[in-house]
Picture 1 (tube, rainbow, N blue to C red):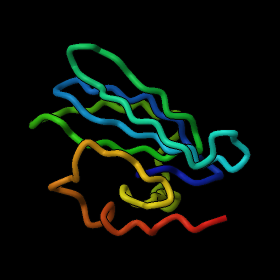
Picture 2 (picture 1 turned 135 degrees about the horizontal axis):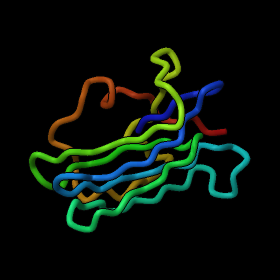
Picture 3 (picture 1 turned 180 degrees about the horizontal axis):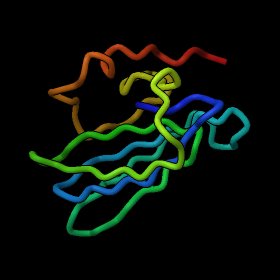
Picture 4 (picture 1 turned 60 degrees about the vertical axis):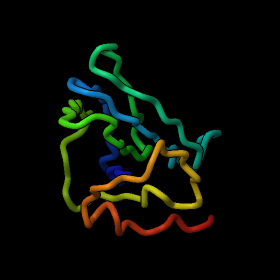
Length: 117
């Protein structure tokens, strides 16, 4: 579950252009009425739907088909030192994924759990 920290948080527009994904957004904006809540949606190439992720929200997805392609449009330039994340299975969010990932990057597997605050 990725996000870019201040001072350059970025919004994203995400679309699955081949295959189907389960896309999840977690609201990490402390002043938001939906702080720490998540929403998950299926994005599929045949529906041509897209999802906007506001700045300050974490984002991740699980591919539901082999050979998926995902297109991102971002509202800010990528700043590697501001790249942050929380673990996909952090109990603080209790995301109801369709199934566990079988392939996950080392970085994504080792993001810390969110601390209570």
